Image (cartoon, rainbow, N blue to C red; front, side, top):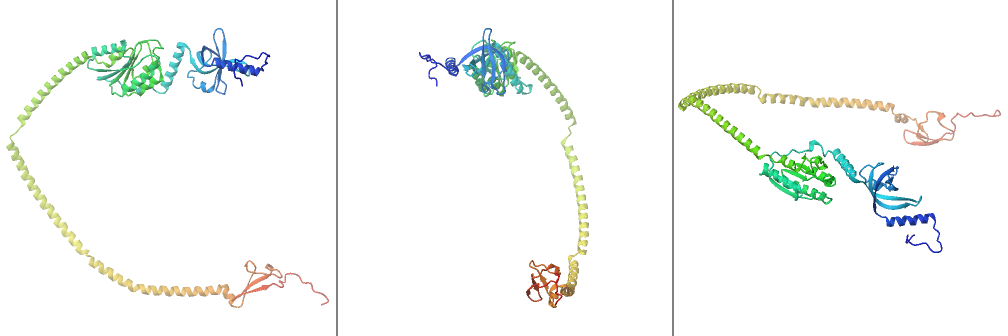
Length: 459
């Protein structure tokens, strides 16, 4: 292990191997140049299957090899290509196997204004693909806002211009300043917090404003965090960042883009003189409509007055109509009552004809007849069944093997209980079981007369 790469060689001419030399040189370089930034142009870009990225960083007078390993390469947002001017951060090292001097990188960024423009285009493409710029999610501005929040710097001409426009066009509108930095790295988090705080206060609309400046000055309005904070707001937002020619990511995400902060104020400040003229016109139209309505109702009242008759005449007509309805009701009631009486008489006659006593007598007589027939039918059925059973018993006894055994016959069974039907099924000396009518016998075959017998001629 090398304890001190700066340790001088011994006076006795210590000889190093190539590996030792490269090892000491690597430790020396990494210790001295451990975290440096270098700017140059990419050339000889290579992307092997391992996921690592290798290229040469050069300027007009020199070049150096660079290695960007896979984990760090995944964090690079822009696409690397030959000819791209970049700023890289890393440590100087030595590839000991070849003795090549190289930079081991952990960060790659585009260099100069072109870097900002590339980052702008990349974020714009990303957010557009997510739908943050779509017209469907844009909210309409209120026609007559009462409370407006202004997210901007508390100093400078922007806030004064906005207040001046509202004072001239709509002094009745309440303006509320949510102060924030509008330039620099610290401005990003401040703008996000200001947007969240303003959105929670229930304003009718918000103005996000800043004066003009360079691309670097306006860059906090091109950050993804600010864009997503604008998209998350439910309050309509007017973006007025920079001059008319300046365009930011915030302009695309906001509901409306205004070319200048003053123009944003004019979009939300209804002209009080126009409102006054419109109010006077509506007042004149309302008076004319009221006069016409009064004239129309007066004519209608005169007509109704002429048509109005004395209430006594109306009461007499109603009394006559009431008498007529009373007589009609009485006649209808008598007629309906007679119809009900006639129907009741018919139903009473039908009910008497269908008295349940007659039906019960008929069913009782039929039940007595059935009670007499049932015992006879049962006796006859039992007699028939008994005769059938006796005949079947006799038939069974005729064909039963037990009956055969009872007449003196027997059945021979082998060791497996199979019946012996021929002598060919036996062998001499074989033991058999003879089943008799009563009990069993064990027998042995002395001769089945199947084996030829040789007789002596002398016998």
